[in-house]
Length: 112
Image (cartoon, rainbow, N blue to C red; front, side, top):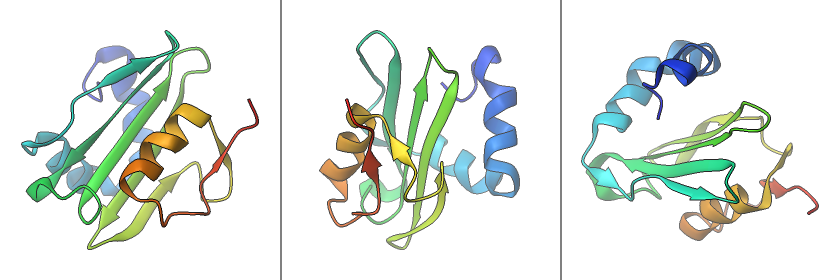
């Protein structure tokens, strides 16, 4: 998804200086692949070493609003969160992250 021409430019600007680390996760063999929900949300986990909860990248995209949602985990710490933690996320994306990392409680789903 991150390499798709319609998404790549916006994605690069969102991850800024973390692009090489993010790219390493995207090329890793671990993860679950992409899912599509509600005909608008595309998302999935990419994991280096197959441990998404420790070293994983969650990438979500809302095709309606053209907005990215991303959490980059490095040694278990969320080192990059877009939008910033505490900002509302669509419920389907928040649930997908919390299914892998239920301890990330500052991730708030939007009211549906």
